[in-house]
Image (cartoon, rainbow, N blue to C red):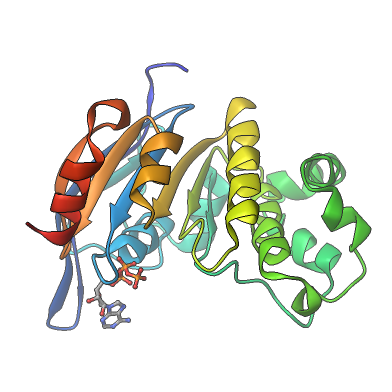
Length: 238
Ligand code: ATP
């Protein structure tokens, strides 16, 4: 892993009408690493991902990616720069086939050109997706849907993947498998920001962790140096 900062979020505020969902949120993601964002329901994790992805506009602060200011860029421009999201709950298009869902992921100009190669890589990582290529995504199990959502994110050839709620609602064995795949994809050079509610797992899977509470980062540090105890306290605001 290099020491280059890939993503930098500097003091962003995001509001929904009168309600402020993010306050002065600051974080840094180094190239090649896995970073986790931990927090209870409503802490603001999804809002943070939406702000980075261009789906919410910060009223204050700055977001840069590879030293480019991307604050206020549109969602498709951000995907084209190399940031892709795996949405909460492995959301896919249930009425489309697995293959169609994957192809949708490579809609940017650069990714379209590499579509065949990207598809092969995705099938190598998730053979089940090749096996079920022509089946409706709506017929997949929860774990397979999550794999399809990851596959679709990979199809845009991202440098950074924002992964919302990695393990939510999935069986423990499936979760283990997903984390293995994350590790493999990371080792090939893709950087990850993971949102996770399982404190132990997120500390184990990442190099840096940020804990959010009520729209603010209340604790951050190297995952190996943070105790589960201190993270849990921060998580609950104790
Ligand atoms: P979860 O795990 O439940 O998704 P989260 O940490 O991702 O939680 P967010 O979804 O970012 O939290 O929500 C942060 C706060 O913003 C919550 O209080 C939520 O009720 C509020 N919020 C989220 N989306 C909207 C919206 N579209 N309009 C109004 N308030 C919203």
